Length: 459
Image (tube, rainbow, N blue to C red):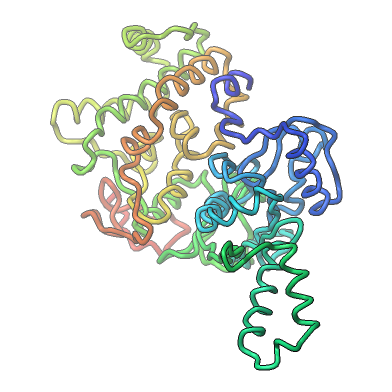
């Protein structure tokens, strides 16, 4: 994994904590939250204040998230907002914390100058014991304050000031005045420099969680479903009608189509479909060549073509179907029909431009593991798990490619692959396929999912 670390592909953009004052401030925050301290004098933290070095020291990578449900955080600097979120149990957690940073940027700048800010992403479920518990997680409330309680004291002082200014006899209330003076010593002049952290609450309906081996939960769609990453099903007591797993491609494809969540790369509004598909072919060829023991340290475009010729007969089915589509696009001919059962089917999809675009692309990344770039961009935990299983030749190539081709222009690459970022209020947009129509016609109905009203003979 050191290749990834050295190339900034793992533990990149973490915030360094090295000064004795900041280490002590972190220790006081850590002790307040979990009753433990670190002996380290230098370490790095993510956007939530989690440190992988401290996780190793304590032999507990979830020391700030013990039950995997209500993540606690330690904020030492506004610079933390640039950092990733490590060991995320929910796909929405980083977005929530980053949004909190943005909404309270000035206040956090002032507060963290004097003290650490500690808090928690609070929901009604304290412990997730079974899949149905996840459906009770709806409203996530961000609660935060400094170790010294400056924000709470500021609110209390503001209330006393209002009382002092509005009550006729307040001038003679020595106890009230004494309390105001005591609080002001703690908060400073809140009239000129107000201290108030804006409370934040958000609703979590569609999300991915790493609990139970990985679950994609979609509740805020026309046809809700719970999708398990592995072959096991979530259970029969969950409050949605549909539950299946990623090893059931027909059900997954029908769900994505009926809810209008995906579009095909070959659609006329995707301007760079040829280059995207060509790169996917390259990634598959690299995987095959690595499995055959080829040295991939320095691979040019000509080398890739030679590898494709050399191992043409050993390429997986995904490669041959994708290549046929690419050849037709290049020649301007009629595109071949790619059925759901074809291994290349999901490689030709991407999320439509809606609020859950990143979540859907995350799901598609797990369905298309040979596209290592999309896996890295959309689902880092799955990428790291897959990386450990690869041949050394592929690890070398992937680390070099991502560092030289993706990291230099992350925004441009994401826009090329997935289209422009959706607006905050973006909802489903019908681009011509319709909610019940897949990229190559209607999705065939799976035998055990009769609610999808598709005709069998339209396959």
